[in-house]
Image 1 (spheres, helix red, strand yellow):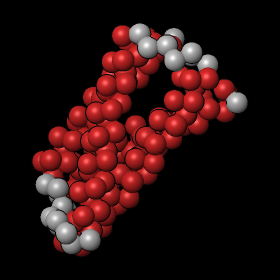
Image 2: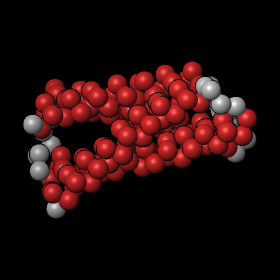
Image 3: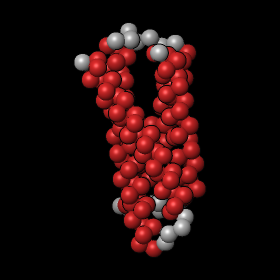
Length: 139
């Protein structure tokens, strides 16, 4: 069971980071397109954001299961830094998904490209911090 949880955890990590990098590349390219193409690309970014949030949820579920089941709920300073980074990453992802859902329903304007860009930078940084401190905490 531990191996299965680790596999799901690492695959979810790969999906989340891969989508983050993809969305950064797409965001740079998006500045060069307009009209229907831009709308299609933004919609695609929204779908990718939903998949990334799903990956984050799987990371939380598998991470908690491993932490409780195999790591005896150890919580040293490296682990706590990792968790803070993951909480920030999760909050940014949830916020972007909520803003996107509201915009799709016509209840709000879509988040500005500058806001999305900053959120992407924060998410990327928090992902790197989380991975570094997970390795320090768990080896």
